[in-house]
Length: 360
Image (tube, rainbow, N blue to C red; front, side, top):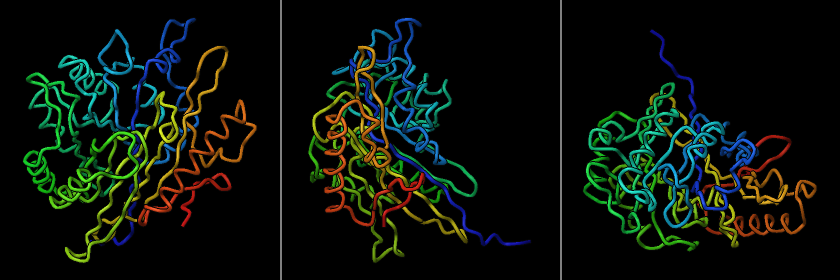
């Protein structure tokens, strides 16, 4: 019997907040077809998303059916999820401050739509049986087994009626879920958190404390969202516990939204490559890809295109105006300054010679 001594790889991409403001809903409506279509939103970023084994998104809207509305209580057309699926999203995490925007019926319909489209998902559930089945969410690929858990700080004061459940940041709940994950014979445990203060570029004490608690319970990777702006990414190996790796991204910012103020008009995709050899699983490399939401007016309608920023940062001819190009350049400059100053062992993926390479 031969022993496998080769190195295996598994790649994951995490994207930030998938929002659905009112102008986005209007933009997606096709008057001729009398239908919604979001596919163009993702056309430029889809190749990046599809270049991973799994892409994981934070769905920060409900799919509760009509009437479709944006802020403050979101319900987007199902076609938004369809376009996410077509663009390469495999997993949706659904626990955030907008999960209860349309009550229990909205929670149930959202997960039913995701199930019907073939997404893997965790974070909010129809009932306790549904939660048990999806907690933790287990990815099985090749020789890898990865657990994913998802929690939010709150739901904007809106309660989830029984029997629906939304995972909240609660020490007892997290501890129990982590024990279940560790008992599932997984290689890595990833916890996706919705936390922090909106529009603040540095993690607040509550994020730092929750991150420490989650790591203490046995998590390996923590992926944060909610602030709608970028926050630092840190990869460290602890000096004890056998050199355990701990990787945290405090906020990936907005993946797509109608927010246009500086720093809210883009975000980062976080790419993580795990390696496994001789039954040891480890972080082989990790890095971020900046993304920016381009909103030109075409045929009298505001459009939304998520751009991989590095790929277009020198392509002035692509843009409708120098104002748009300069706005993207400002986002890139500001984001790089933040990450160059505060990131630890997490570099940028840049686009060179039609390839994405780590700028180490």
